[in-house]
Image 1: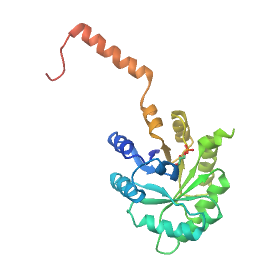
Image 2: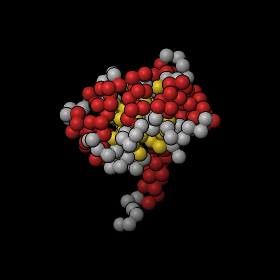
Image 3: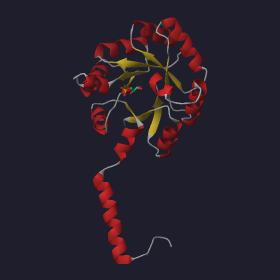
Image 4: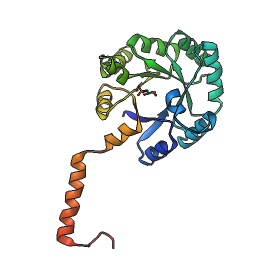
Length: 225
Ligand code: E4P
């Protein structure tokens, strides 16, 4: 079953979403982290502890492999459920490869993926996750959901089983059910979209009508009192 991750670094949003019992992980990025007042490392630790053993993606800031590896090792030391987010590119591939050979094996989420070839290279280098950004592709007139569908199909035909596809940059609830239908393993959604997913105007109207019918016929009678 498709998993839902929350794309947020906000502790209140994370706690609220956790209480719904629907999220299985967190993704963050430097833009999301920069909006929060907490010092970076404290925030990372708090998010990881709230999520218990579920994965929390935190992105490196360096743009060269050496620096990415150093930052990744530091982040991985903060909590056991850290997944290091590495931007796609040649330096990123080198970093993922180094972090996944030998005994070290730090799980990586290769981010900013916009093509099947980028997804293939990231999987080959050893990424545990890849994140195609569908909203940003739609923004430039391409088909974000179509990219997710193609990646899932190619991974399946090629027997790529160790890299999970996270549909990212989700803009609205329709994106979520479309990437689920396309076979994404995970959809990472902003809290605003998660709330929209749970609601429907006909649900609200339905509840209102049931309660007013009951009140009209049975006054103040309740259940259990
Ligand atoms: C995913 O991991 C990213 O944090 C996120 O989905 C980016 O989305 P945006 O295009 O809305 O910034």
